[in-house]
Amino acid sequence: MSDLYQLLNVERGASQDEIKKAYRKIARELHPDVNPDPEVQNKFKEVTAAYDVLSDPQKRQQYDMGGRGGFNDFGGGFGGGGFSDIMDAFFGGGGNRGPRARMRQGQDALIRVQVTLAEACFGTDRELTIESAVVCPTCTGSGCTSGTAPSMCQVCKGRGETQQIQKSFLGQVMTSRACATCSGFGTVIQDPCRECAGEGRVRARQTIPVKIPAGVETGNRMQLAGRGEVGAGGGPAGDLYVEIIEEEHEFLVRDGDTLHMEVEISFAAAALGTKITVETLDGQSEISIKEGTQTGSTVALKGHGMTRLRSNSRGDLIVHIVVMTPTKLTRDQEKILKEFAKSRGEVVGDSHTKGKNQSFLGKFRDSFGR
Ligand SMILES: [Zn+2]
Ligand SMILES: [Zn+2]
Image 1 (cartoon, rainbow, N blue to C red):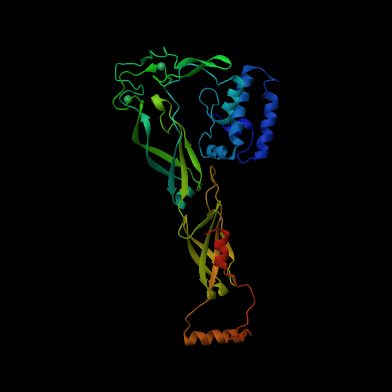
Image 2: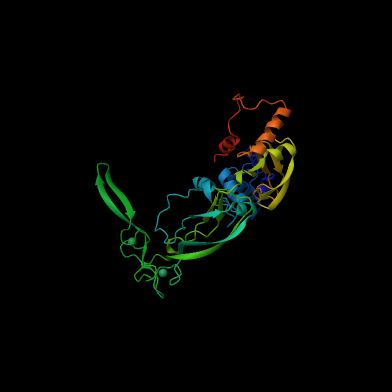
């Protein structure tokens, strides 16, 4: 399958506006009114299908995660989603008469998968066990006992519909409806398969290996083409969507590709400066605390944040410093602190305060909705 971004001649990170412009430009050159050559027309359809995916943020995200995003390269380039509806509108897909097919397109299925923050960052391989409809192994989808085949419905003579003539005030009106005997199929299964009762499919447990890419987050959906439910009559399977749910981390808070954490240091360390070791997704990292560090100040660990989807680059880890005021002082320590304050000309012991008392922790949690 061709790369959709290449088809439209845009960068991976292109904005919706750029994508629209790029499509307009190509469409002007390839439009059927301008260039009726069949080869050019195939290209036009392909580009249109690519635009159908990339112009829809949800489909685009699915595509970015390795799915097709509704883009179907089977049989010439398109078929899923809105585009086929447009084609139907032009070429008349509706209104066809005759018996309906036993074989139907299967349903899409959705499964949710919990991943840890580290798995979301680095990607992971999972084996998912799902219960789904599969082709009946006994009749391989035909719905008939081995050696038999559906026979023509005697009531509708294979047309799948019956006609009635009714008298109305407009005169005689002929109405047709689906044949009740064969449910509109035009054929009857005389000897249905015992395993699936003629459905052509059965429910079964399946184990499906799934590669979860680095950089996913809650709500992301991966599309596994053809891994959904098999349709009635052994029809083609729908797609399986795997939705990511990211577990909350013990001390790391995610905001897009940036991670945040809080580190408490003593007020002496904050005043004098120090080196501390913090736990990150990549193991331990040492950071320097400058002398005179205030509570609420931050240190950025470049490249220790989350991986960006479909890219090797990573965001930053922001370490928020919380300076702890010492409590439970011994008499000696109290004495030293008082002398310290005196030496700086600070008044100790009265209740005079100056605003700014909203706790940093509260602000931090509020801003990330935790
Ligand atoms: Zn069967
Ligand atoms: Zn019938």
